[in-house]
Image 1: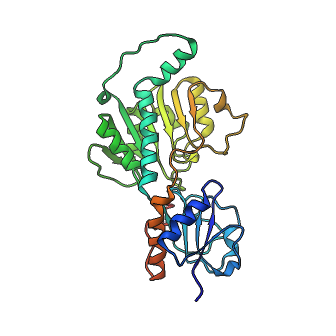
Image 2: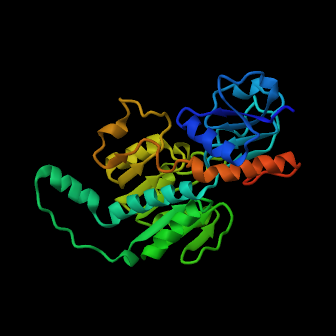
Image 3: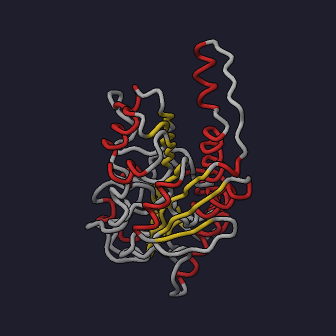
Length: 311
């Protein structure tokens, strides 16, 4: 009896950890790591992260593609992928890591840690009186699988949290809104703004020079979603002028970030190398296995992606 076969591709994830975790859930699964795929026509499933152009052309009999992350912008609207179900990961480890990153970045600004870091480099004892967290308005853009837990955690810490999403959400402790006018209002009212927006045709370039100018002078901006939701040149200009006072950035138009990029020269930018949230195989494998089982039964996978919406 021929076993179902899965091809694994990722430039950053550990295939050994994934093989161990996934085959413990599905012992009958033939786990293959690209490029050692054997006969491509025998591949039924793909578990991938940022596969290169043309990757899927080799596999004519795919039944399911699972993305090794929450953002699926690299999978939708590809010309090498025939219409098959696409699922994204949604594991508690990934959610916890993203929430911890957002809490760190927001708290670093709320407690003036960035000011103390500079003072230490100058060898100065520089006191700034702490502010109560309820005075600090934090806007979270994107209230999906990652954004909603982050927003609610911040609210639980005592921050004044406002959330914005494409469609109206209802989250305890978070003032939720939707629509273009509401986005303008949120940007104008929050001193710290966190982007956890998925990259879709609608969100691409959503935060341009006009939107950044709406934010209070000296506002802090955190991006842990996709770089392309922001006009990078406009953000650089706003950071240079002080219109945006500080930024914590985990995602960039080109990665790794080129050595000559202006972000490296800006003292008011904290750069992290796209690690705000990663998948944890031991926790995520159960969902991947369940999606495969569902597809075998002719059912939709878990966390199915709407290719038209882009998430």
